[in-house]
Image (cartoon, rainbow, N blue to C red; front, side):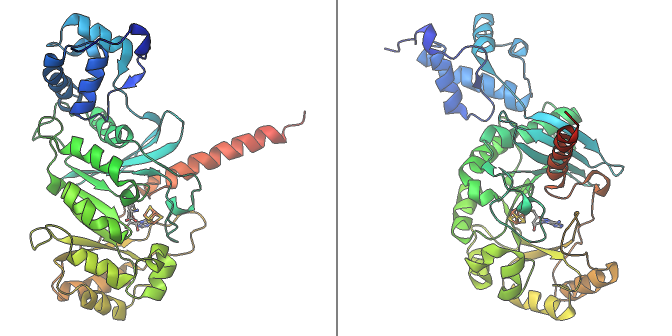
Length: 379
Ligand code: SAH
Ligand code: SF4
């Protein structure tokens, strides 16, 4: 027999966040609200449809759920979104949101429209424990993992902003790249829970082929991620020698290039139709010589791969400059001649600080300046 919990045990004041819960989690909440066991699965499916297929945030809109249950849900639960701190639009159509969790910690999401797709660059952590020298996020001290609700919430919020509910084939937002702040493989459980929701066919229904997870090279987690998610993998290579990669991507000291490439060869499901993307940030005079381009194609021989050349996006105080356009072209030519597609990623949204981690730091700096100004005032 299912015993309904005493009213005093149920958190009141819409304290239970439904966003980020899987179906079992929703059924548990329904049990807590006294929904009989035989109805829980069906009601959880209905909630799922309204939340993840329709994007509804108000229980009153859930037409096929009994009024009394809607009222109960509204009393005890909510369907939230991350708080929007800033909403910036670039002249090139890129949109960037500075977001905050319930604890006021900030993270970012960026929407990048292209001719054949629209990608949302999603963050997995507040800050990052790794300290890649060219990356602004790596300079931020405060780090915590984002919750599943905060990860799915970035996508839900972008869909809200684009007015794209319910999910349909005409949506402009078609792809997710886990290339925002943080190292997704250091928050794999939450990333997996969030992406499982995003890929569920009865909700958002994004295909795994439209999701790319980018890692700096957390070798022991790569196979697990591939098995759990089956999404596309991008690897931040950025250097072809261990001494240089040790400096640019310090996790290389733990997992050097040969180990990283072995893990790429073993990545579940990798084949010519599902290639691994190697990301290579173009740093002037650091990693952009012809010899390095030749070494790059030699290193990845045998791995079904694409190479993504990323113009370095400078930030105030960054120790590097971007390679010249002519150098990037020459580097790309060598890689192309070896038979690899190597699109040069266009810098997008420079006018809104779309480079990873920049907006958050700007906000922190502004606040510090404001605080300093207040402190400087005479008593
Ligand atoms: N932590 C993961 C995913 C987030 S970073 C990773 O490192 O792969 C996403 C991509 O942006 C990585 O390839 C990263 O190296 C690159 N990147 C970071 N800062 C950059 C900058 N200032 N200019 C260009 N690319 C940058
Ligand atoms: Fe972290 Fe990736 Fe930035 Fe390196 S490049 S500091 S792993 S977010």
